[in-house]
Length: 184
Ligand code: 5GP
Figure 1 (cartoon, rainbow, N blue to C red):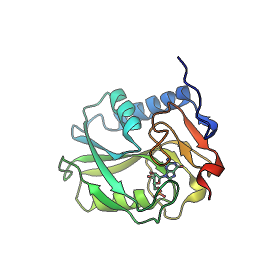
Figure 2: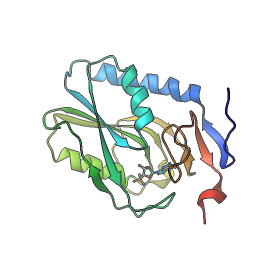
Figure 3: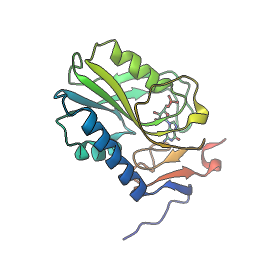
Figure 4: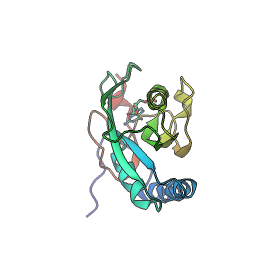
């Protein structure tokens, strides 16, 4: 049964088929790049990356391990101050592991920049980033993205893990929210 589209949705930017096809391509690329590295550890950033992480890791054909971290970003809904803090760390040690940080979206770049600096200081064997979506028009710092799913326009998006005030995360597509919902 197809569920009705929530009223707050403006339009679908990436449908389920497009997302699944791209996730499969990313997984194939990552599997090829890490074919010889037995210690690949994927670190997903909660909560936004949980669905992307689940789909991506299930398509990897190379040996890998899965862990998560959580961040606080001081801000609700579509507002953020740019200050980032780690509130839940990995369980797995990262030193000497091949680390792949998995994020839902890069906006200003502050979050990814913080994560790369934080994890690099722990001396992993290697560190790369895999990001499903990016809004290049919004970038304030040059964050390193090694595997990118899609570029998006400067709109607030929800679905496939992405939320607005903790809603809309489990929509199977990625959609722009109506501006009047998040611009006050
Ligand atoms: P940054 O600005 O540091 O690159 O991104 C900070 C965080 O803001 C992202 O990890 C993500 O959680 C959130 N974010 C940025 N843009 C969007 C968006 O369009 N939709 C949603 N749901 N979250 C976003």
